[in-house]
Length: 70
Length: 486
Image 1 (tube, rainbow over the protein chains, first blue to last red):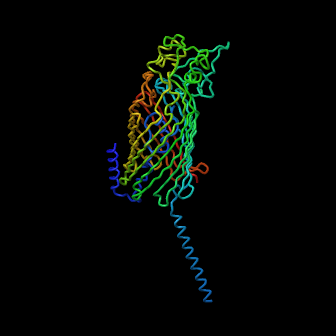
Image 2: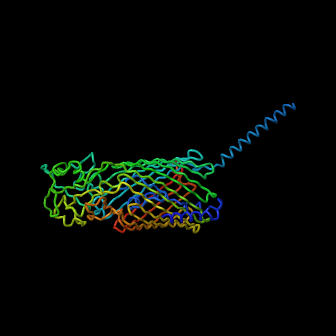
Image 3: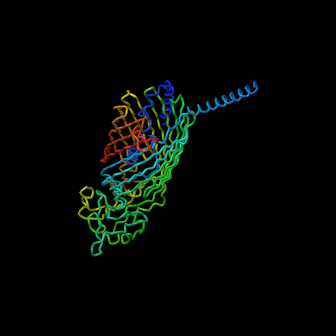
């Protein structure tokens, strides 16, 4: 586990060395479809997945509350 | 005259200077872009329908038919240039064959602790009791067949002048018939490297409370103890053994009513995102989740392999109990599921999006999950938005999921009464699932279509079909409208 975390940190630090993209060059990055989050209507799919599957979290959404028991 | 002229000059100069200062001040205000230009309103509706053959209410066997209609309204209001208040309110109504069978034995019962219509029996014309029947394969018409969940979340966020630091705080509340949840949390996000990098940290706590309802037969045992077969619901009711012969030997002695009803969840999340090139960006999420308290569900039945079987209903259906052809008999439970009072979850996820062309974008997601109940899971999904015109985007969706079972899981009638923890909830079993669907998105940045003061900015429609390898399948459709107040 420790090795995996170290590897992840190295990858993250490596990403820092990427060439900086200037704000005026971010037209494509700022496209609404490029957002690094789940889309708002996707929340209902996430909810039923949390109910029907054991795994949850790490998707930027809600990770607790409610019984989810039906 | 010269003095007056000089005085006028000084006055005008001072005015000009002061106006210059005002201009500078005004200019500062003008060029500070608001975080949110105007109030936005999202309205969403979702319809979900599922079916399956492993109802956890019936001990891992039986109908899982369920429908759910949910809607939310989200209002995001700019309070000033830097602060946004978001209010999210929702209603979700379900009907469920599975939960209806908390009380499968009559047409009116619910096994709610206080309101207790378990005693309500069907009477024939002469005032005699009509022998109750039930089946795990069909819904009963008990009150627990349906419920409504109401929820509200209020979030406040503040962005720094540079927009490189954001903090937020939220409170949440939800309530349904047998469950109430109160949550609160907050987070911070820091952008750096010319907004190419972002690191965020978030914590949340949910303090939940059960109002447990139990399967009818266990509820009656919990209230009346060893003499329960001559009291309450069981008074005058015939219990059958495996041979279909009347018996009074049924005694779910392992069952006891919960003496605690709290379930608390705590989470901490770290996120990191990075612009890789002009066309791609990536993000990582790492969560630690802890749950404690009553993590079992009080109406999930358990049937032990080493205990005799007892039924209520039609004796001739007993040999076909596990077949969907059984329409007349229901087995009495030995206990409800028992799970440990704590659980740690460790999910780690990443998203990577790539702008292939003006018409095509690739959105990907992967998550690895593990917990201390011995479950590991992998999730991968991909979306491919295709811009048909400036306003219309269509996107196919695919998602794959697989998990290994919890060490506390065993199928219907496989647990032994000597075990400490047990569940027959197939949501904790080994399975894989495929989800595929599509979405259509309409976007009008100029909000040409207006309804009163609301300009329509966006419509999103999504449809997905979900197939689980244990036989559960479902469909979900969602439509969302985004309006901008003008």
